[in-house]
Image (cartoon, rainbow, N blue to C red):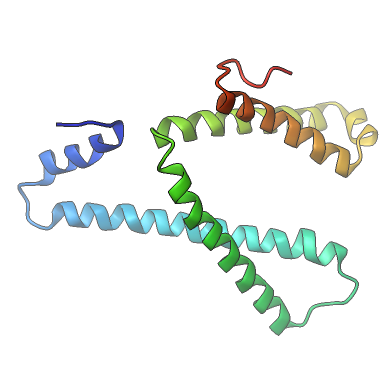
Length: 158
């Protein structure tokens, strides 16, 4: 009856709520509204980061309110198109839940390590400039991802 792990939740919903007309649809509406809420929050946050950290720090001229709104909307549309197009790549990867859990664990573990080093080892902040810190963080996060993609189960092999 179930061929993939992704089909377990719809089966559970239909088995438990299928007797009540309209309740499985209400459940699906809740799932979609939660997903859209999370997506819109993420897109809005990324647009704010791009505006404040990237554009304003490297731009010499101040932005007007109209230009700020236009830039924010353009970033949201661009990131939205990127997110929607990545859905088609993710659906070919197999079990999405397992992949997302392992990738978020790898990324969050590296982020916690870098954050803790900056918090508890004050000399790290003075040794590493912002660009070097970003390069180190990207390497720490991406090496295990590349190892998983290449089939090594222990990560990237530093």
